[in-house]
Image (cartoon, rainbow, N blue to C red):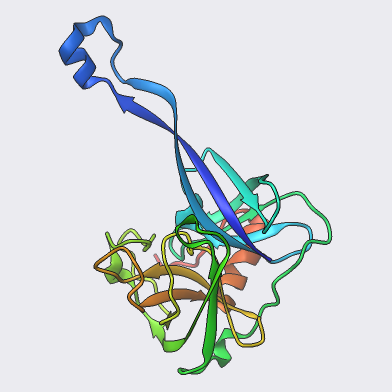
Length: 226
């Protein structure tokens, strides 16, 4: 039920240097059609193809594709995303797809054994093991850090784990010893861009609530005062 998510973005190359060398014969702006690609992970949570992943995995994507282990890529559609919690839902066409069982993340205890599943550094489907290091972490301090996806917002109630999480693990599964989903791997603190044993996952109870709203309306409505 854990898949690899491939994204592509159309980029623009600046022609400023070319204009400096060759004059204004070149049009201003850039050269469209260049492609910037990225990779993350996702989790199938319904047999008809709804997939949980991170917002920062798919944000700005012009094309999203998904591949299960041993399968070819298939087109995916963005259903909705919530940048504040870094949750996104995408969908592929399919029937009777394997589905990840969702656990109750409120019952997690510090010290519980957990496994992180995803496609780190594009090496292929990988499982790493660790424990729940802490609960209720805030990761707003990660602005500018690799894989945060928070843009400086203070995100609360994250699961901290020492299971190895690297680039490409984002949006993948953090599961308990029974293989049930307890969190969505989302961020790391690292001075080296690699795992140093401080990773964060969005609790599945929060992800479930946001997912239901995104599937129903395409957005998350929040209450406010004022």
